[in-house]
Amino acid sequence: MIITGNDEEAICKLKHFLGSQFRIKDLGPLRYFLGVEVARSKFGISICQRKYTLDILAEAGLLGAKPAKVPMDHDLLLLSTGELLKDPTQYRWLV
Image (cartoon, rainbow, N blue to C red; front, side, top):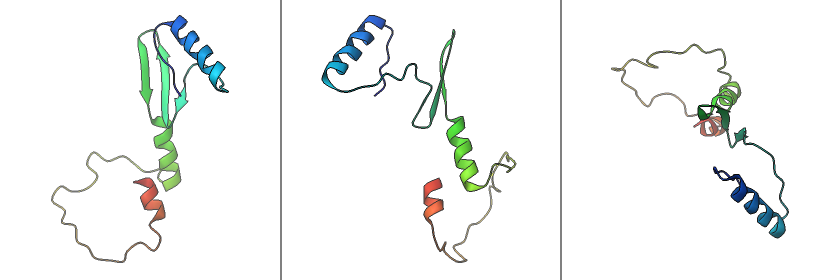
């Protein structure tokens, strides 16, 4: 559970109440949760999925791939020829 707000006293009361009802652990300020990185500055909060994206690229073996402005020709005609994947597990995981 992520608890957020701008009223520190209310947050402390909520954590105290939850602690009285359940066994909880306060992990401190949020930095990373479910693939989302959270960074704070004096200008506000910034969230991104850089680490999650890099993990996916590493898993797919594409960390060294070069970016392309357009991934394929816009007039390319795709046909359903060729063999199906023997094990589509990795493809499904990436998608």
